[in-house]
Image (cartoon, rainbow, N blue to C red; front, side, top):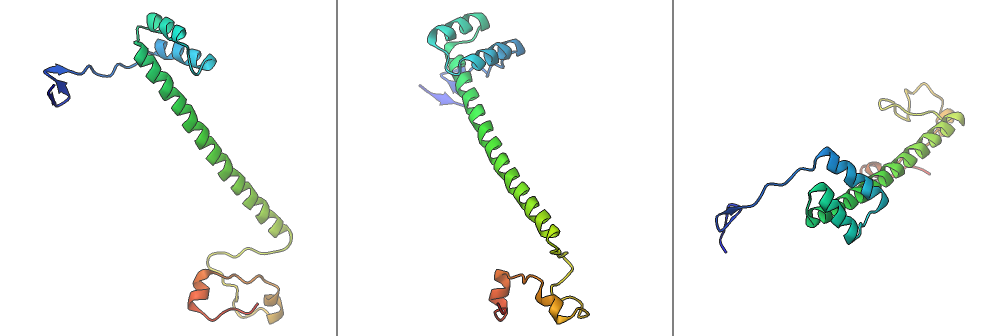
Length: 139
């Protein structure tokens, strides 16, 4: 057997057959009731839709994979939404408790006009970069 540019001994492999909207509708309805159709069901579908048993097996396999992938994406997005909601609740509570948020351009040391006692009540922001480049901050 000689294979050259997708040809086997001079015969071209048939191009992939796209399913018609009617075929897809019937396949989706069947999938809704049976994710793993029996041999009898596949034989009936093959006859009515003009598809081979192998085409049906592959369609159902790919459809199950698609559903599994969608479930994973939905789960990850749901987890991310929960993290965002939790962060939002924490910000709301912090604002309600009188904490002030710091803009990108502000520093915790302020402009120098604030008294030392008001700065003592503000939270100290520590970062790994601070630890590596500066003296340790007092507790």
